[in-house]
Image 1: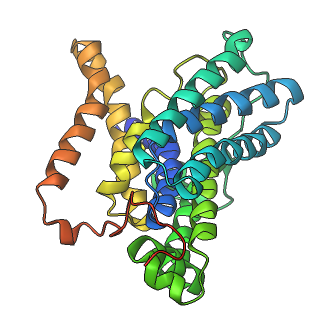
Image 2 (image 1 turned 135 degrees about the vertical axis):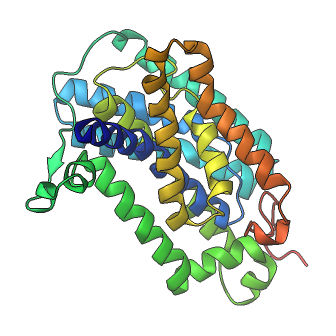
Length: 306
């Protein structure tokens, strides 16, 4: 029984890792006041770039860094249209998703069905991995897991405890007042969108070079949309995103646990997305003042505007 629990929890951590990476990136982006619905597309680009580079070089770390660079580069599109052109952020984000999905399918078409010779191996932390039950679950994991948790905690500290983090939050709350204090609102929003894109692409890299050893079209499987819901569920807090992401990771794993019971596979595949809709429904009926949403989220701001 203990082995079963350990196995399930290990898989839960693995399944929740890309969700955590994407959610942290989206939290950073939205706390600056920019709504980014392009997470799914950026995640897909990150997955295919990481796979291609890893397949070509045999180095999954190089694949990860290449994916981050590609994700940040393609996110410039959303930053430019949302910040510089003052375009509708919903339309821009959806366009980014379509561009990312189309680009990734085009780039990865010749790599479908080709397995990687090497993937990102798990790392067992000395001594800690020997702790009964908890050791194998938390301290014998993929490097992506460790990085995701550390980056989430670092993002929380940055946003809540640093001067620059306060500037980011104030940009999302009241950009006009922030600008009067000499802060370049546009620059901060650009940086947050691009950094958020790097996080999303890193999540995609995890899917193709650690979670699996292959590339298939539609690999992200709607995880980008779940990330957007988790951002709300976590109340725009990177720290709370940790448990929220792994909760959803458990829902993903639940699909496979219930299959032997004869439950319809189609119904089980629907569980993560049904849970997403349920969470959005519950959050929508809460007092908006308690949601912690940035006051100017999704609203364009023109520099010098009064």
